Length: 103
Image (cartoon, rainbow, N blue to C red; front, side, top):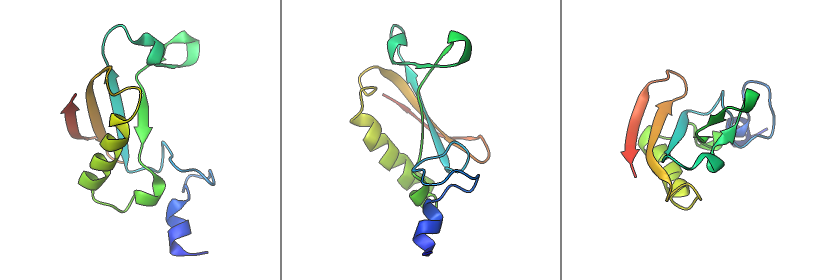
């Protein structure tokens, strides 16, 4: 198996995943404006949560700034672009805030 294929695999056991909440380097939390509960993600017990995206596993070795730029470009083309207040990027390994972008 090539090194590139190894980087694309999830190290927590799930295979053939593009993104993984455990193995991705960055987590992007989209903070929606009030009144957009229909776009929130339904959780257990009927609670609703803001959407969370993770970077592609194949890009884990890239610099955080490159990942943020790529993820934000995808965000700008999504249905969330016009209904978000802010987008926060967190390190998925440490939980620290990397950057915050006001939309």
